[in-house]
Length: 353
Image 1 (tube, rainbow, N blue to C red):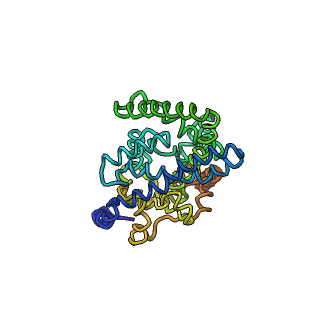
Image 2: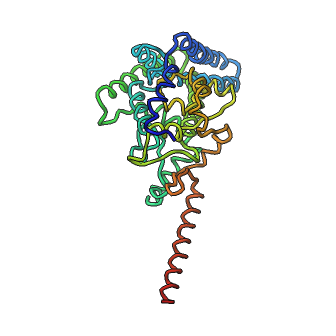
Image 3: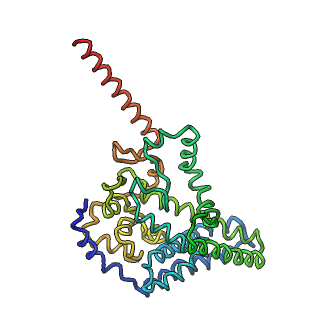
């Protein structure tokens, strides 16, 4: 655990890694956006051969789209490029490939960084997570809704459609004018782009080229975001007990992926580094992790650990860990049994007296 007095130390340690490199940023673009666009064109021409070939090509296309999202994400933190304006303009352009309004997404994601692991400030830019006691207090309909929301088939099947297609199109009533403009202008630009593509190649062809990689990339993105903060020994505290650095180092996982998956995920598995200093661009995260002893004891997950973490649904405040629905039920049964034994013991002592 990091003490409050050591804050300046880690800030100084990580400052050199937060310096953007134009060369590395251009390399990122060349190995993400360009391959995504090239493979999308290849998928269109593959329609003349076989739909199966299109679906096969959708897999690497989705991988490059995930990598493109990481650049979009870095732009939201102003970390990919040295210029704030350049990050903003590139973020808006990448947002059109991702169907995401850059300014609003940047705001919501900043809130996520400022509140991650704080039980009192959940709800913006994160996956809804209830404590065991909060879940038990819900009426049956509320429990069912939460279970459906966290069910893998809905989370990774319907989730990408909501997260990429539906959610970003909606303007909140209480949205600030800047956020409202971001959503509306993105929606208008996407309507023009999609209409032009449908006119050029046909609506069915566009759907077959765009949808498979987009939805697959969306599923991967949701899973990555899930396991970054939803693992067994995660960090959740309330109010004054919450601390930014501890939330980053204890509540953000180090997802240790094979090299190929690390490439396609843009090093986002080094999420503990990213949460401690969001200004570190993706191309410096790995180096920052291995060159600083502060990261030696962070929670480390393998690929299999990340897959298994999907079973975890609730935060148990008593045991300080994420649990499955079954573990939550078992814990409740054990506590109730303990209360009954305690009550019987009190009754026995009272009768003896």
